[in-house]
Length: 255
Image 1 (tube, rainbow, N blue to C red):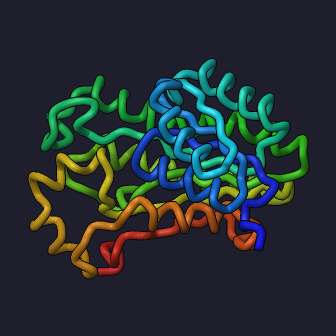
Image 2 (cartoon, rainbow, N blue to C red; image 1 turned 90 degrees about the vertical axis):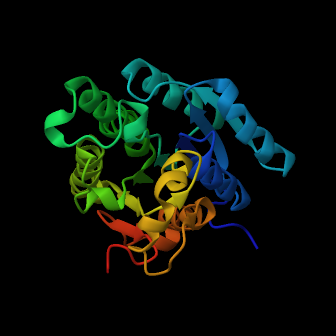
């Protein structure tokens, strides 16, 4: 039986590890040709090697999603390699500890920290859509999933910059979904809760027991669990889904 992405070309940003790597692998298993992007081509190449070793087809692309020239080149390389762009998973992101001290309340946070967070987590998603959508328009359709977070739906103390960036992702996802629905381009976002990835490992080492009291399922999610949902959202099986925030959090948001 053919996979649910058979014959499609997919682009994943932040594909070197965590949710991005798991999703790239899942896309390939479901039949897609995959362009894997991360900050450096070398870091993306490890994911590509796993795909190719399993009999898939993938290429590695380096680039910073906060820089428009890099994003434009990333999308152009994908289309040059595979001829089209059917699916895009705009996943690249950073956490508060990547841009400054953790545990800061709003008045303690620097503008440098705030701006650096939005540059990757929000502007990066905008730039990816800006350059992905024209190709989808030209070919008659496509599907996009952006990585938001439960932090895009609720407040989290001491994470003003992260919460702002993820609320922004939810907002631009809804707007793009409305703008391009008649063009057969679907735009959704995935809203993970606490997931075991290299990015969350330091936080979990410090506060795992406390955080798990807020998760009814009392465990971390896995990158594979997010990947399976993203692949479904990108596929034609989710053909009536657009503008949605797909929450995958072990019950955190519901509690």
